[in-house]
Image 1 (cartoon, rainbow, N blue to C red):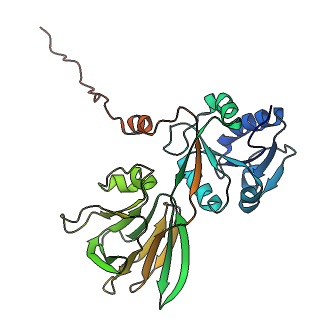
Image 2: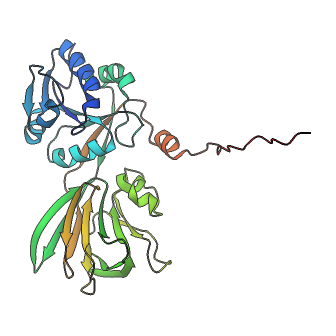
Image 3: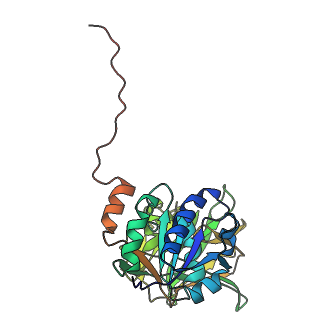
Length: 303
């Protein structure tokens, strides 16, 4: 049979031996179809020798037609940042709970893969954010995020103060525990916990959500993804402040620093099964339309 994907990259959850069984299932399936496999170098450490080529993320991105990520949404977030600059799409396999991004279970893997390898799948593109920290007119560090860039305090007892600008125009000053700048993909993550709206992944927007703002009228704000967002860290701050990307990368910043956030030019390609339904995932994850469970104790009184 002719397959549209012929070189497959495999990435497992870092340092988690529980992914081994699913990886073995995948390796056996792909080998029976004479497809070339590139195993992520860190993932290879979780398995006994399989006679497979191990590769770094750059090599996987350059050589693979498809990358399968085994773990959960966090594993996929990590893989997305390292692979977004390459053309290979990503398929997420969840271990345990259904994910917003990793939506294929090991039980349905063989049947789903057969369809995907022959071209029967859905594909969507997800925008990432690129954040850079500017100090004294110089970029000192930068990082990407698929979900969100969060400017936040590291001291539990204090608020921080930042000023937000959109394309150079002043929005507001925020005195809060922090400020979330989220993609539509990230709108179901930390931003949702902060009271932000759910944005469909197809939208070209960015979401700003203050975390526990001192002024209760400061509400989440949706802006164009084509805009440049600048967060100025006020000189009055005395607590340590961090910029966190996808909850996985932490960058230290100082009073007077500017965090410049723009949509990344390249988009991430995500592969889904043919029956993928975004709203079904929302219903399942957020329990929409489900009756609340009442564990009402039995009345022990005797008639």
